[in-house]
Image (cartoon, rainbow, N blue to C red):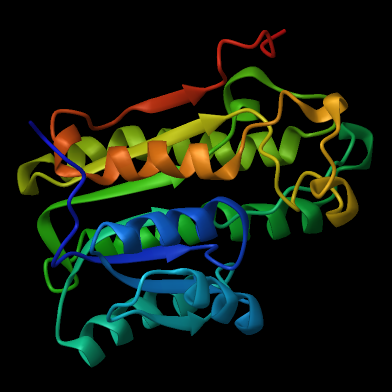
Length: 246
């Protein structure tokens, strides 16, 4: 029977300073992976490290909205550790509610750079045989908004839709190296990106439909694992069959 075993695997987790990224890093550490955590907030990255199982883990402080910085840090990770990357969980992202009448070029640029450009930079590195191992895996956190829309979230939805489109093409382009590329489309997740900190700590029935980040992390880890070697180019809705698609 297949199992989720990551012993000997070197994995990058973006957005590892909180939420789904943090939970994904913690879970992967329990399964023997060697983790490199990427995010902007160093103190929060250190907190994530403190919650993980011991291992050859490290972190890098990087602004993922800067394309060339993402490429440079991944090159540095490989060169410093003298070991190529086996998998990447791209959990970083931002959301900002903006009605269409208030859309601006700057708002589009800011959201697209953090959510989509960062993923494009990651896949550029994945496509390099010098940086990323054959038979590796990439999973990006997208959003149900990309497929089903949400009022005042057109830019965010477009940025996640761009991720989903790139997943489809990258899966085909990297198939010859048996590299799998997938994404998850979760509905709202109970994280600081969705709720203020004071509400995160409450057991409020108003937010009972929000997904728990640890559960979403489990799905990401499953897709990253060799157990899912037949699955690539998939954008998986994660919604508990809730009727959020109207």
